[in-house]
Amino acid sequence: MIRHLQTLAAVARHGTFAAAGDRLGLTQSAVSVQMRKLEEALGVELFDRAGRTAVLNEQGRRALVHAESIVALFGQMAGGVADADVTGTLRAGAITTELLGNVVDAMAVFRERFPNVEVHLTPGTSVELVALVEKQRLDCALIVKPAYPLEGALRWQPLRQEPFVLIVPEAERSDDVAWLLANLPFIRYDRLSHGGSLVERFLRRQRYAVRESMETDSIEAIGLLVARGAGVAILPKTATLRVIGARVREVSLGADTFYREVGMVERSDNPRAHLNGDFWRAVSASREDDADGFRPA
Image 1 (cartoon, rainbow, N blue to C red):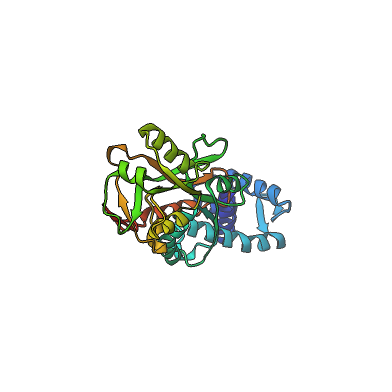
Image 2 (spheres, rainbow, N blue to C red):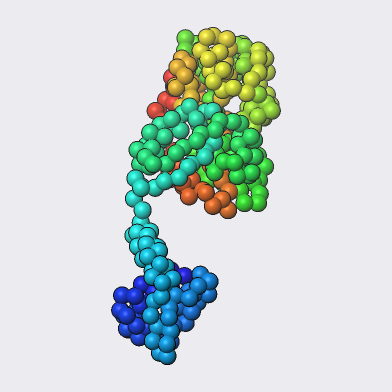
């Protein structure tokens, strides 16, 4: 249809179907067919026809004003829209470790690049956020990759692999994983969560007997408890503990290290999701401190 509008503008500019056709590389008959189709689409006659002549009527002159504006906007689109001119709303979700970590850093970059985009950020668990994306209440969400396959229109964009580490109080000097787990209280990452189930599998596989102390799904609470000397824990390595100021030390699990995958889930058929890729790239480009808030062993 944009070609029909361009042809209408050419007819108005050059006076006749034949002259417009010469300018556009079309036959007079092709120009006539396009104008008929445009009239049918709009439901009005744009020309007063008499024999072989056709002159824009009042409806045609009014339509021409809009046609020229649309053609001009199309030309701008074809040339690309500057980031600063992009408008709209990004409705993004994120698990807390991402919201407090990488998203905080990425948002400064994203807002500088897209100053006219309104951003709505929603915290939640991975399961909750997947459901919101599926219902199109969110455009995208940063989550831990589910253990089950994503189906239908849901699409996965991987971001990074996060290794699990043993965190201990900053003053604890031992690096012996087996000894630390056997002798210090163990603060468990909720085994009903995906990350907590990975920890449980690791403990069973390595046959570690731990001194159960408490259990919670909050990585932030676990980090603060360890920092206060309440025990040790196995957590994914994220920037969150740096952000909340938890003074803990990391002990590597060595060859037994396991990982969780963090990425972005979105609907491939969401018509409002044009900013998802820019958000994902902003988060991807954000660089965490090498220590991620931990003191390496």
